Length: 165
Image (cartoon, rainbow, N blue to C red; front, side):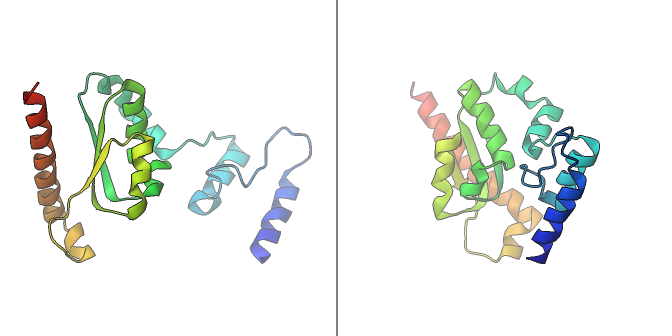
């Protein structure tokens, strides 16, 4: 509770009442990285943007996806928070914008992962083939092997459907 009082006191010191600079510690992103977003925004006038948006812009992803049949993304664990600004959510937004199905792969999925289906991820698939420890799942060679095997099966199914047309 003392930290909240200190932050409020600090905010009052910064806000001269002129409205020239918005001092809002509740602004989205202001609390990340120990308040770094707040400091950058307040003292340097920085614009805060979600990391995934910055990566998509920097890589020029939107310039290359409009010809894709599918977009593929993934992360370690897909859950409801995946749709709230994580990397797959940026890919999902592009998929929705261009009408492209988005397939996501992950080490695991939680019960609330279906939330992602309503937010641009067409389908998601866990890649683990057998029960294992977190350490085993995160082993780079095993993760590559499991992801490749899961992707192969998903795209075999898609190819079979497409070939019937």
